[in-house]
Length: 283
Image 1 (tube, rainbow, N blue to C red):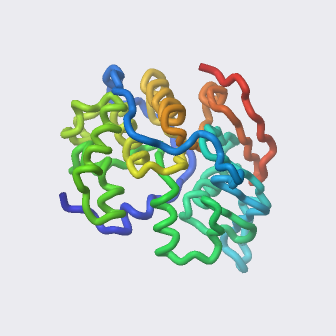
Image 2: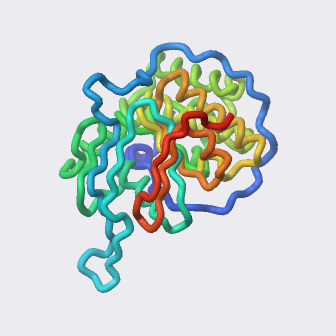
């Protein structure tokens, strides 16, 4: 298949904050996912306890040196280990989207340290940032951002095409496996316009996972869905976490979804005001 410009797929759009939920175009089809196959990342942290994400004194300001200079993130320190499932909560304007942009290597911090996979990100050029982003991160947005002219399978394989310059038989098989695990084996050849909202978001999750990233950043991934579809999508993310050991950082305004995460980090006015583990997350 022909691909869009390399920068389009290699650099996800910045997280843009909260949107207003809209009803999904119909209920998603019943889930009949196939078991996952192959190997994933280990759930436990590495033996040397190196954090997947390590922030120390991280600050982010805009309009530096101008009269309207404003600091949005104020000296954050945060660690996320491999295999964690973390909710990020906080009121609108608290800095959640800015934090996701920094974590996603879409914007540089103004000060402080951000280490990803043990590597300090400060000073990396665009090529190195792109390479690290493709190695370490998957992205799921509130709106699925699928390419309407491409099939579900082509949308899922697009990150591999842009990273490797081709989609070989093994990559296509991996994409088909993920679609099957999402209950979408029969929808591989369909375009986004032929799928319900919940199905489109499941394709987007498969796209985020196809490169086997150790961390997925999800910005209100169920905020655009009806309750039934939202429950299905969230259950699939938890299943991916459980069976593949993928870490998730999920921004949500839904207290019910936050209660089903293993850890909740609360951001208010650009500062972390709460960070608690939940030993018995909700169903």
